[in-house]
Amino acid sequence: GEGSEVRCATSYMARLASAGSEQTAPWLATARCLRSDGVVTTCWSTGDCPARALRRPTTPSKTVASSRRSSLRRGRAAASAPDDVGTFINLPPTTYASIHLTPEHSLQVMKPVAADELYEWYASVGEYDADPSWASVWPSAAVLARHVAVDHPALVKSKRVAELGCGLGVVGVAAALLGGAASVQLLDLEKLAVWYALETAALNGLTVAPDGKESGAEDDSGRVWGHEYDWCNPSPAVSNVDVVLAADVLYHHDDEAVQSLVDAIATLVNSSSDASSSSEAQEATLLVADRVEGTARSKFKQKLSAALCATGISETTHYHSGSNSSVVLLQASIPKS
Image (cartoon, rainbow, N blue to C red; front, side, top):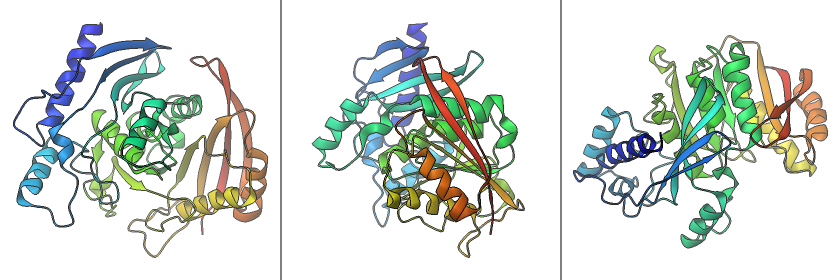
């Protein structure tokens, strides 16, 4: 019921606050439940949340280091985010949501209330060039999450997965939690988006890697990493993955932007001298979900074939009941080098 949703959210945020303070959570504003299209959300405003005072300094103080260790014991992403993501001293109005992929399969998601509120928050902190669109769970992400986690989990099971342009991380978290992926890298240009994605991973009981780096060790299995990632300047630190997942990334139509996306995918699937773990797979699988019209899909397919020698390129259309819209899912195989 609605009351239990409020209690659950309040308990969760109170535990999160305890990572940075012995106080309870007086900063929790009034909670209200919202329901739309099967999504149950509980909203609050973080105010002066003590856990947000843990922005990583260059040299951590003993107090911050102690708080981090305490949070790691609780499995929290807030204190275990990698250096290129960090933590945040305050947050935009935030919501706790249940995303139902099917009646039997759901994820818990921590997210900004809406893109409008996030835009206003970005403006209030002087981030005028930031993109707030990641604050929503778009139909493409929901369709792709269900595809790899429920309908065809063999696509990601025991595989090294990267979600490019992860936003809230719904697809990558679903691949890890329900699809059985060996490991998942959550990658986005928006640092705050990666922070929320890691919080969502931890909220669903996944292990968030404390340093943002894979060691290649056996105990890396099942872990989730997050990185600030610019596909116009892709880092070779994330490479040799078996599956690349992406939703709503085909919005730029100019040749340079599409080529940058293709080059980033090449960096992700190919081996690198900087890579810390290896994969025996000879081919990588690419899955890209986007709306039916108004995308650069045709140009993207041409460049995939020409630049990456992609084979088996196929498209299927999927209906998303929550938005009464359709999503095109593109799949391809890419040889590794």
